[in-house]
Image (tube, rainbow, N blue to C red; front, top):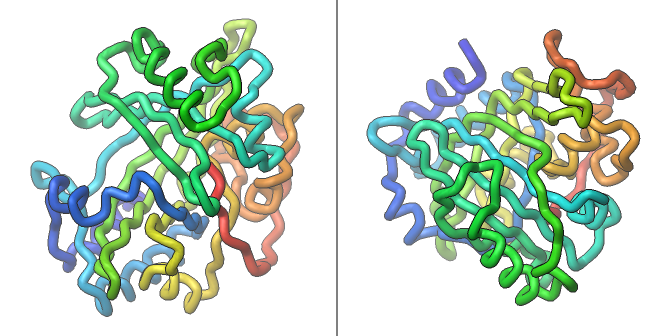
Length: 289
């Protein structure tokens, strides 16, 4: 069974929830994110407990409880978005198209930092090719300028890193409202090379990325993960993926998670240079983009 199969199986006892209800209950475009990187067996154990002790529900669309995602990230020639994140600047941003591969729907998204370390995501439907901003450049520029990114309307953004994975989304009822969580499996990155050679790739089928999205109060799933010995870790699908495939770039914020977890699959074409250490050490809250 794939990691996605195992996740869906362990969550099978939970009721489903429609997209409209989930958005009404927990849209969370401004939120605190906590991210966890777990081996598949550990993730299944945590989710099994969740299914037994909470009234969480699983997003279900046309009978499907997981969906395939593809994100294309846009950056400047000098990788301004990457370096702002790598150096933990307060005024950082991320621009991407996100395509839901099962339906073909695509959105253009801009993520920035809001007050008190929260993440603000703004998006519009995107009818262009996912690797082109097209008319969306106006939306990106206006959004970046409004969020205090100097020169945001004049950035020379072009497509770069691509990430792909399957996602299961949970609605988590909480005492003071609702939170959302996502479970990502089959994560893989791809990056074209300047000389047109075979793209660099890196995949981690042995891992599950769990992300909780809510207010500053930890959710029941956060507390359950902590009881199982897991703590938030710094991982960014853009920053971490690019640091893996471009070892000439700084990897400071993600170095620990790279060394602990992100070994390549047997078919990876990524450059060598990372190592893995088995030790588990306490993590810390990741509220980065």
